[in-house]
Amino acid sequence: MGQHFIPQYYLKGFCNPLKPSGIWVYEKGKERFFITSIKSTANEKLRWPEEVEKYLANEIENPANSILDKIRNHQQITTDDKNVLSAYMVVMYQRVDEGLKRRKELAPKVVEETFDHLNKAILGLMNEYPSKSSNLEKSLKELQELKPKYQKEMPKELWFFGITPDTPLQVRFIMRDMTWIFLTTNKSHPFLTNDNPIFFFKDKGIGNPQSEITFPISSTIALWATWNQKAAEGYMPAKENVIKEINRRTASIATRWVYGSIEEEWVVSLVNKKSWKLKRIA
Image (tube, rainbow, N blue to C red; front, side, top):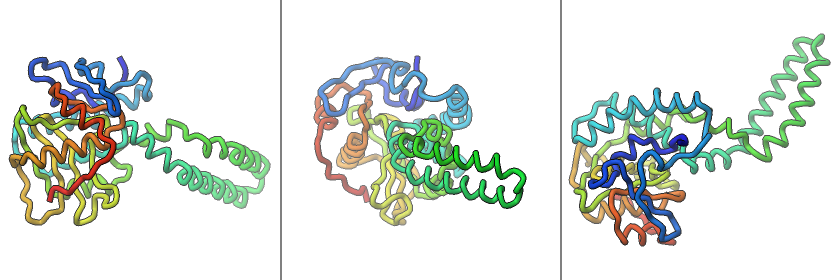
């Protein structure tokens, strides 16, 4: 069994009602879909070291699972609960394949800044400790020889050891301070999820007055985080057009897989769409 990049406990919220351990899986760009067990879904062998797996389970997932339960049972959540779930969502955004892709896109800048910092540090040590100059010059030369390798391909370690809710820290607290509305539906009009479930409009980010975040919590509940001053936190039945919009968002940002509680042809059509016209909820 591999390591799950989408937590099993989260996926349980999207299980088939007739088969509690099973979930429908749709492949993006193809008409392939099937039902499988949660254990065999959204996982990869040797994805990250054991210490990363333990950190994710003990520090991120376990504290959030009780919050997911409260939301799925329509219970009121506290500011502390929002803080825990914000950390969970930040890590979710980073731990998926799209998170690795984003980190790789930033790698050239990060590598340049890191090596520039190390270069300046070694030069400073050479000035401070002239007697060590010979060894420090060797380190400087080794550093310059190593730089092209890191520029060519980012070591995966830079990704999985950066999977924390404090990278960057401000995102977690901005997310927590938004107004959280939990949109509800019934099992005949369910929410979907995917292998990259945190949605926001990239051109607006999350700190803009028109920013929105949507995050499916289960097949019957989705989080809508907004700066809309007229919105009040709590649970609200979702209109059909809003359910469709959230599912469009979910399908549009899927890397490869969309997950759901139902076997329906409309999901196949949705997952295979080539272009998207996404709208703000409010």
